[in-house]
Image (cartoon, rainbow, N blue to C red):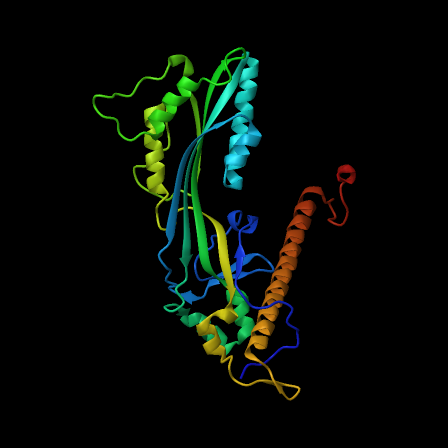
Length: 343
């Protein structure tokens, strides 16, 4: 029989899709089946046994884009973390060009690999033995403390390589060196050239500066992103593509979290369909789900708040000990004269 608490349900149980900075800036790694709390944005233990996932789908894009200014560059970028990288390099080369009486022209090379529809196959996933033991012996509150009020059901990942190719030309030159850029584009985007069509050397006075950064690469042997010219840069893009296609490659960009009350095995363990009465009325199963979800978030948030207060207490003790060691007088009860002017 499921005991009901008296906290009213203020939020309906159901999946939530997180697509903001809570995901891609998280210090902990989201993984399928791991516990999570929406109210505190914290991860808990992985309480699903093995948590087999469905086969994900992958999207690929490879672009060679001319950009005129920072606003134009930002409009072409797809992730928040790549914006700062591109803006910093464009500003640096712009200042370098002005110092030498030149203007910097920039080209973006973008390689994006997105993996999505990777989700828990709940028909083959069940609670782990330890999670079942907590639920059976200690009850739902202890389960929520260990496993969170929700779990990760789906994850979307994105791996990205961004390169800024920069060349300089005089202030009075045409807007862009279109023949040079066309040759550069042909060498980067073309497939292997025939023997009777060797690659043309780019003009020496237009050798581009290559600035590259990548995110979400997997650990793959023999991969290098170091490039000094166009042929080695093209090879580094191929290597980056290999490193982006691992099963766990890519930074997490979105995550689907589902309350435990929507998990079939969890519902079977707490016997959600058993009759519960409140004021001589049978409580519907959906109402019990809503109450459990709300109370689960409340319990996790209260526990995290208590942990934060305990952390602040020990930090204060360490601070007090450090002050006493550095500034205390001989009797240990007053500060040295020199300490009275220190903030």
